[in-house]
Amino acid sequence: MQITSSQIAALNEPQLPDHSKRWTALRAQLGDKHVDIESVVEALRAFQIAIPSWALGTGGTRFGRFPMGGAPLNLEDKISDIGLLHALNRSSGAISLHIPWDIPEDASAVQNQAASLGLRFDAVNSNTFQDQPGQANSYRFGSLSHTDQAVRDQAVAHNLEVVRFGMELGTRVLSVWLSDGSIFPGQHNMREALRRTEDSLQRIYADMPEDFRMLIEYKPFEPAFYATVIPDWGTSFLLASKLGPRAKTLVDLGHHLPNTNIEQIVSTLIAEEKLGGFHFNDSKYADDDLTAGSIKPYQLFLIFYELVEGMRKQNQSMQELGWMIDASHNIKDPLEDLLQSVEAIKLAYAQALIVDDHKLRQAQQDNDPVIAQEVLQDAFRTDLRPLLAEARLRDGAALDPIGCYRALEVRKHLIRARGENTIATGL
Ligand SMILES: [Mn+2]
Image: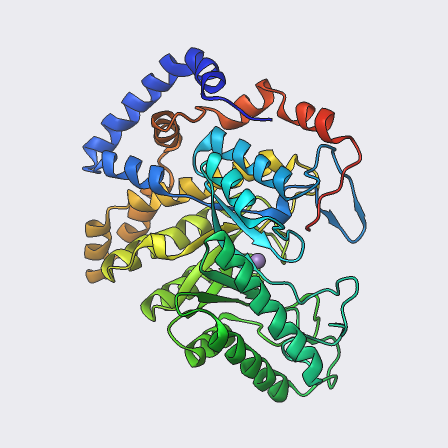
């Protein structure tokens, strides 16, 4: 299934007068605040968020799974689904692949299909957290950190194979997340496990092409419930610093203990030029992998404020980072959930762009926390949804992506084409 621009235009048509009214009012409101609205609209149009190939089907918990049908059956289906999202919002123009869940058998055919939908490939993700059929050595007790050299060799070779897939698809970013760790105290020697991990990562780093970057993702617990080898940003930062300038830290929002100040981590990583990218999702308790912005939208805004402010001051480009969603959809239609996540991320970005930075700096200089809070919350509480809609309209996307998705009965079409009882590879 494909969504055409004329279908979108026809669905936008009756909504245009109302949109125009809301957009005009917002423009006047922001104009009074001396915001350069056009530059915010242009920044949003340029901003693309990568959709993970593993999150297009209904996920589950260890207690059960309730698939809703029409899930993609192969990589072509997944690219096609991301094409649908991109047609609706023009902000999902990239794919993040997971190997071996999604091995591109014919790289040029896959690239052509993606290009025809306006998509490019973002980071490729390796997987040494589960065993694959026919695999010589098991990752039951770790991969890059394993006590057995043969297991480490196998995991290093897998990562380099993922790099080769990335080369073929035109991306230059490898994302590494390890589940390595111990579930019980005393199970392994923590210092030696860290050293072995560093050594394995060094081998991957040394053999990557010179223009390839490595993102090191951290996570405090699960599936290792006692001690994960790369549990936090500090350990990731340490390893990335030892590897070299092409290794950076990847921040997955759900990979923190409750109440961690993620925006401060982001700020420190920007200051040290070690921020590599994001996996967006939201959570209440742990790695819940919920829709971005569904639980803590203010936190998402504060993260974006640090990004916008820090990168502007340090002359770093937002384009250099990996912007990816990493979520799981247990009860929502995965495609609707992804549309909501992209929208929430863009909204937080737009809100950060309209912060009166001059006034905030002055409040900081004057040690005036009252005005500082007023400035931040003034941006956060401004309803910028008409601005996002305007950015979409200019790109030929839907004024109301979810409304459009439902009006076109996309899920029904997908179920008809692929069947009721489909389960996609992935989470
Ligand atoms: Mn992640």
